[in-house]
Length: 135
Image (tube, rainbow, N blue to C red; front, side, top):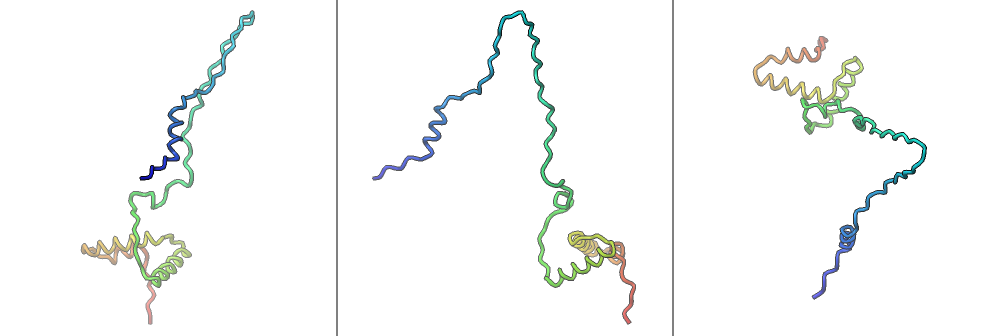
């Protein structure tokens, strides 16, 4: 039967426990008797610690908003490209909307339609339909 190898870390832990705690040296005050009157040195007060600034940008997006929840859905590539193209057209006309807002709107309209509401009015509120007629 072979003897188990001692742990290489065992010595580290043993020496850590055996070493006494050494306190940092404090400067000794030398007291001299003389005719010079010494004024007490003012005690330094700790500067007021301000809360450290957090790194990075402030959390102001949907990810940090409790009203929004992240989900992953699959859509066809052609649909995604078509949506991206239409959103770009809207952006050029000054209408800022991203895909998550579009999906949220469409899902809420679908729920209201399921509940019996007139979705034509809801869709008209979101974006005006084109009044062009195909001849």
